[in-house]
Amino acid sequence: MSPTPSLPRLKRVPPGWWVALAWYAGVLLTFLVRARLPGEYEPSVRAGVLFYRWDGVLTQLLATALAAGGCVVLGRRPLKGLALVLGAAALATTSLSVAEIPLAQFLAADVALYLITATRSRRTGLLALLMALGTLAAFLALRLLAGWVVGTSAELVVALTAVVAWLVGGSAYEARRHDESMAARAAEQAVIEERLRIAREMHDMVAHSVGIIALQAGAAARVVHTRPDAAREAMSAVEAAGRETLSGLRRMLVALRQTDPEHEGAERGAASLRPAEGLADVERLARATTAAGVRVEVRWQGERRPLPPDIDLSAFRIIQESVTNVVRHAATGSCQVSVAYGSEELAIEVADRGRGAGLATEPGFGLVGIRERVALLHGEFSAAPQPEGGFRVTVRLPVPLAAPAGSTA
Image (cartoon, rainbow, N blue to C red; front, side, top):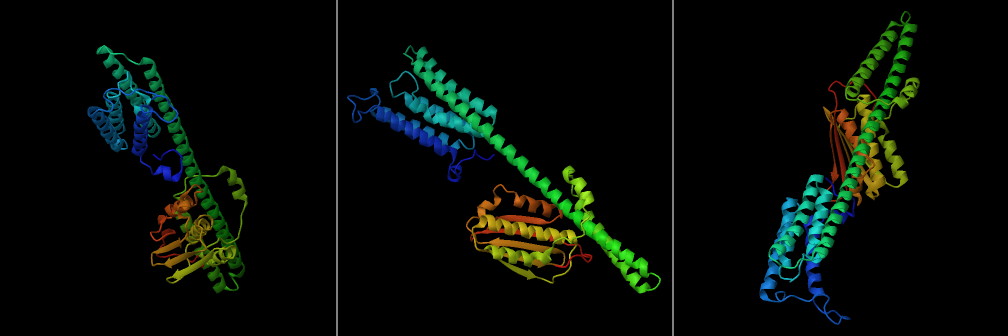
């Protein structure tokens, strides 16, 4: 699970470090309140007879070592780590000559309790709270059995801080779960919208192909008796367009499982005959982006040849979205687009040397749409920062061996 939203640097701090910081702050506070500070006539708390003796100092060192062990294992085994911190709090109290575990000694346990409750399951958080309260109760019970005075009122205040830490941790846990749920829904919605967009683009391609078929069939009917060779050529074009359309539908619609009721009626009546965009439009995209301030260098490798319309369109959309991510997030003045035609696949790479590469994976879901397109075409997709700086998107799309004539790249 991802931690609760916070500053990026704070996310990388291990939980044990926060507990250790709280422990050492408590130790420092313990010494400060037992010393006469400037402006005070006497210390706030009178030191016990053992506090400055060698055995008292040794007890504090042993308790600190025990707390350090708890900080080390807290991330892997949270309840064990908390148990060690609670044991350190009880051990450190024995040399203070007090009737209860003071808040300064219990501060690290409160921080550990918060972190466990905020990042682990509810059951683990509840067990952590019971362990904390049980430690306080056991400390008082042992003093009662020994016939010593107990600080019940002060210990109730310390117990209240534990309950507050548990409640705040539970609130952080619920907030994190809500954020994760909303992010998952947004990502799912982005996938659905991308599939609907692909389906609409497929509708345009099919409408275009059907229009071509109607025109060619009509031409063949008019010249079938006077110019049989021209009629035969027109019918061959009809056959090629039909096979091409069926091939694209077979590849794309088998994978699509979602529908868009809001657009269905409009799509049914929108028999657009405009040709779909494809790799032939990459140079135009590069010129427009360069004019906008980010220079796009396009490199072609291999023999450029016609591709099936669905692959041609998806390749263009992938490049378009990748270049858009560079413009929005990369904080750079240039990027490189490589398109390599292989015998059985089409390889696409979009790379930049910008400083804002990490932002390309933040919410916006451009990469989610690219991943969905590639998955529907049974291709390979990767997107990651480059070791030398910048960001790189790499896509490989399988191309049918006998690809029919489509839009020219």
